[in-house]
Image (tube, rainbow, N blue to C red; front, side, top):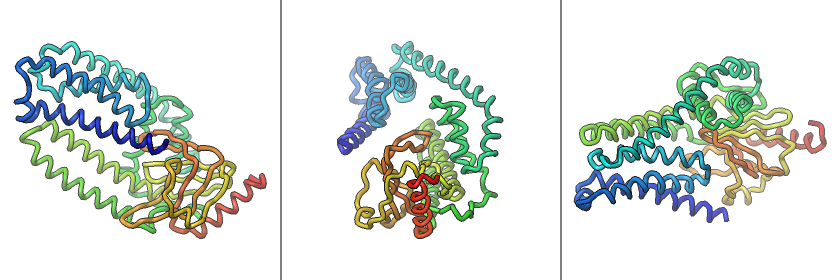
Length: 353
């Protein structure tokens, strides 16, 4: 069943990319323009339907997240995208439809700006709550936001971006925690070196593509430039978040994060068992398992696997929430980590914590 869902998701992503790329090629290549009929209105209608209906449905199938509100947002985005993909001379008869997308996006932007105003009013108490908390910043900030805005997805995404920029530009003077109950996750690997290599590759690609495209497609050149700059900022922030937020073991729970990509709070009362069997750990882990493992060019395996009594929620990139039944962890000091985990779990089982 899980494999079937993954297959459907991958097929949906392939079809989504095919729909977008085929429509772009149709209007921006000599082959595509030559295949357009004399009366091109029917083709334009087909492209509008592709971008405003088919593409949103495929995107939802890829993300496996179905919501009427989300679908309307994607439809409006598709109509706006059509304005950039389809040349203006072909859209002369469809301006009202195009403005519909702009209108919907305008309403949504106004609503989101109002949420920004509400967020701005609540920033001082949120920061005060974060500063007074003993939790790692990734967790204390997230908890403060959840308390103030429990169901505002846009604000959660925005705050996730705020964390990214904070770690990318505001943490260079900070040092990682060296408390006895903290454990780093990356020093046994070349993960950070690998991330730095990716940043270098993006910089080189950005310079090359921008130079190649700025004369042929200025819009595409600027879009790719913005995406690449965002990627560089994300990787820098991710490295800093990984360095400054080691796994922390408290009396009653574990706070574990892996950069900006994922984080999870695990109560010892929710742990059913600890698996250390090498044979099990070296097998392929099921999709219900979240991994906190620094991977590079070598194949590595977790030091232990925590099986939970019931699925527990984790926070992923952009504030996305997902529940997992198992947690795979690899730390830089596995012996000390296993010892403290077993001690705390034993106390929890005896009702001492």
